[in-house]
Amino acid sequence: MNELSFHRREFLRFIAGSPLAAYAFSQDSLPAIAQPKDALSVMDFEPLAHKALPPAHWGYVAGGVDDDLTLRMNREAFAHYQLRARRLVDATTADLKVDVFGATWDMPLYVSAVGSQLVFHPDGELATARAAKAQKVMQMLSTVSSKSVEDVAKALGTPPWYQLYMPANWADTETMVRRVETAGCPVLVWTIDLLAGRNAETTSRLARQDTRDCMSCHITPPIGGSAVIRNRARPMFAGLSGEMNPSGANWSYVDRLKKMTKMKLLLKGIDTAEDAKLAVEHGVDGVIVSNHGGRATETGRGTIDLLPEVVDAVRGRIPVFVDGGFRRGTDIYKALAIGARAVGIGRPYIYGLASFGPEGVERVLEILRAELTLTMRQCGTPSIAKITRASVLRQGNPL
Ligand SMILES: Cc1cc2nc3c(=O)[nH]c(=O)nc-3n(C[C@H](O)[C@H](O)[C@H](O)COP(=O)(O)O)c2cc1C
Image 1 (cartoon, protein in one colour):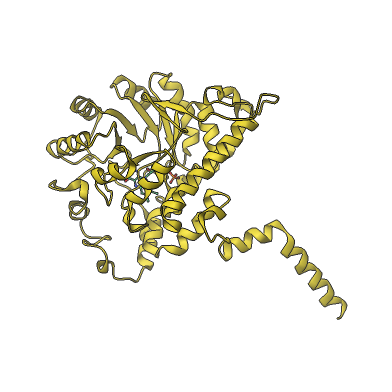
Image 2 (tube, protein in one colour):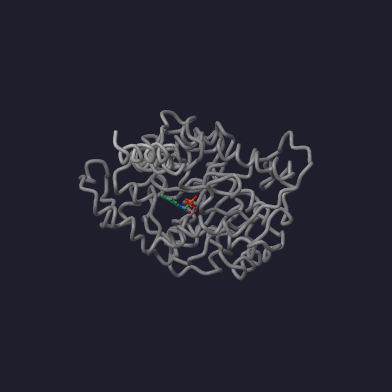
């Protein structure tokens, strides 16, 4: 062996042993995850889901809007916050229980509304419901679901929270609201961040790469064609016009919706102090700080950065929830410290669902539970009430 090939061999051995190389290989090939329990972090499921899904379906879940800046900021903004870990507090256990509208949740985490879950698993939202039930986690069901609220309630063992895309006329809205009320849903979540439409460019680009014949599976054309006709085929639009998201909606719609139902009314997509104050004034029961997972308006602001102004504006009068980019127990911890009651996830559980069905979703919830538990123990905050603004810094400064 000449000197050059010896050095080459040594260099390759060095590279192969480095964590960076292991990471690069795991991105290139897939992480060695033969079963859900092999996953170490919730994002281990992302490349598996990517592999499992055809381009159009991958684009549906992974895409944001415009340049996907807000999507990226949802993740990057967590780096603006640091933890203040207190020591010598009994770290034996942590109690993750939290009260939400009089119900005791096992942990401050829920699976947020994601539409059309048949795309990810043959049982769609029912598969998610089974996992949520097993992990005692609340499921929020989308208006554009593949399965009905009644069937999801059965699979979940309790009625889900219902996410409303408001139908375009009041008669249809009333019919939908009555239906979910009859199904026993305790909470109605009106999503208000898509009323002006959106530019889901990445999703459209990836759909163009898909050469399959959509109509071999879909009943109505999923791309192009009429969204109204597509909606009519969905279980929650049975007998309704299929039109939704009235662009003329204003705060008087909140008053009318509030009067229409005994369910708790939440607004999903509140991103500013001004709107948070208006929400309280109009009597809503809670707000969700959300930018639809970077899929609505390209604001360039991560939701964790929006949370402080909303929490401050609300001043404890109603609970504040948040979603967008939550991938680690420390992310959840930061939101709780800023003042969120609970945190929602979208893509992580969908990646679990697309990879391994309900077991994948369960593993995602298990990992986040374990990570949050560990963070609470490490930071000397063994119950949710102990996590306060003193537990966190923003850019190194107190909030
Ligand atoms: C594929 C997909 C579909 C979604 N569908 C809905 C929906 O029907 N209604 C809704 O209010 N939000 C919907 N969302 C937004 C989620 O409820 C949630 O706000 C977002 O996914 C949280 O960000 P994350 O994916 O980074 O966790 C969807 C998100 C994704 C990724």
